Picture 1 (cartoon, rainbow, N blue to C red):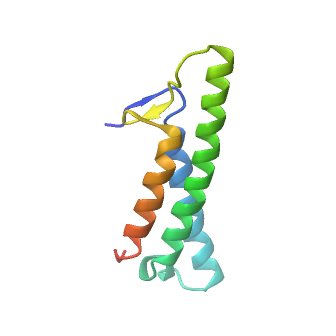
Picture 2: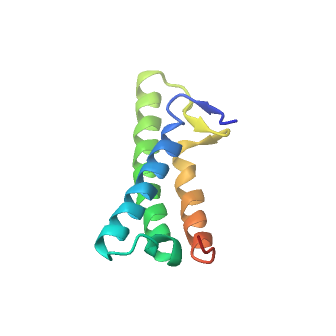
Picture 3: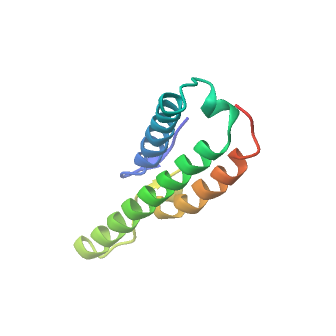
Amino acid sequence: MIVWRGWGYLVFVITLGVLILMELGTGRLFHDPNYYAAHGWPRLLGFLVAAVAVWFLGTYLNQRAERAEGKKPVHSLFFIRVDYWAGILVVLGIVSLFIRG
């Protein structure tokens, strides 16, 4: 079960979307539909791109919440703030280097 508050579900949507685009892109670029599964760098790059996007999104949402409401940010996924997910995605990308598809 996925638990989120506010726009927290976008962490999942962004990460999944970037990883799918990386799989489709590497398959087309290298003319090998199994390239993504056989190599770790496309997953690492996908996680890094998703981490950057999630960090910017989280920072924007936090600033917006603090200005508009003067409250703490309420956007989270699995009780972790959206901007903190950027670091988690970087770690997941590094781990994915060592996991074969």
